[in-house]
Image (cartoon, rainbow, N blue to C red; front, side, top):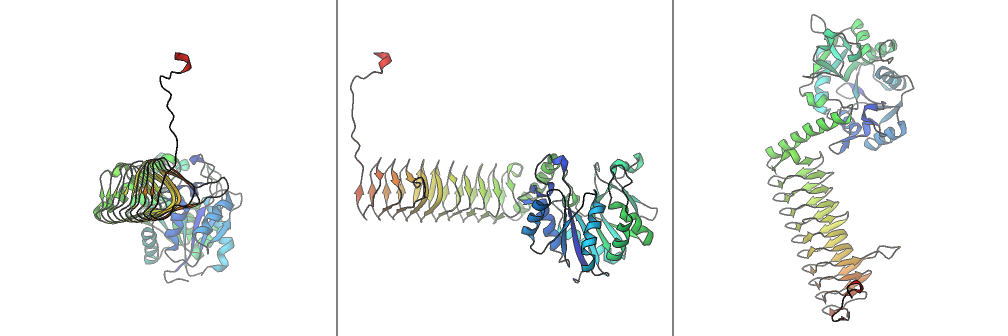
Length: 463
């Protein structure tokens, strides 16, 4: 058993989440780039429990597959068709009991609380150990407790019971302290408490909250109030998800600004949790920063730019563009209206200008691709210049072929490179050229295209 005494963490992920109106299980919806389940599992496993279990039922294989991708050691527990959180824990304990230290504790957490954090859980466990209660419930005080089970205390302030909203009286509905569906039980208390659960309630479900009443008969039930109510907000529908995501995003932006990042308009800037931004970077309005994007100091991003798993080096500028899985070197200039698909590497002092699209392009330092060009499966050496309207024709109908353009090359406007093709260093290509064959170093190449003029011509309908 770990030093904390936490012998198991049980995460409840069996529900369908019908109010999400989705074919996707609720726990696999995302907030700030990570699924609800991934976020809760990360918070629980950071406590180093003896084992972590995820209870599944609705689309069980899909949820189980996701859980295993987050933690290869996770135990998957299949809940049967009997509904309710109480039944989920019964199924988990039936499978896990032999692996649990009888002197330890079990943490139970719902998986629809995407901002549940490790510090809050650690505070709950420490409180449980300090008070010696047989069971402890994590609570929160909410201005609007609608939808949550209410915490009913006795005259001494101990938890008497938890009443679900549909079963609550008018007086009970006025209570603002709510159950967050996160608990810590002593192992022996939990085994006893779930044994006698019944489904005699308005929902016809086995409530885990009823286990607290059983636990109270054999000891005391305590409560630990979450310091940050946002960390224990649940999500039942897409409206709640949008509100929670906005609140969380504002906090992320504020934290970055306090660390030295300039964000001109946090209300229109969205930054996922795995994004890193160095001090003195500037984020202009309307930006969406996703995945493992990393932005260095003095870079300027935006306005209206999307970065997905992109790396932006110091002093680079990216304006009104979409960039995915691409490295942008120091002092590079990107945009506006540039689309960099996955697999590009642009070195320092490069340029990808207006209406440029790239895919698997390697651009060496100092090279410019100013505007209206497509560069795919291509390497261009240093200090070359590509004229507007240039295309590397990389697809022959079966294979993607590469184009190699050397250093110090001047590419004329409107060129078409038919890959596979190589152009040597210091070469020059004329405007409108179609390059099908190798161009030697230092050569000049152009395509002839005779111009024919018909004088005094009019279309047939004018004649």
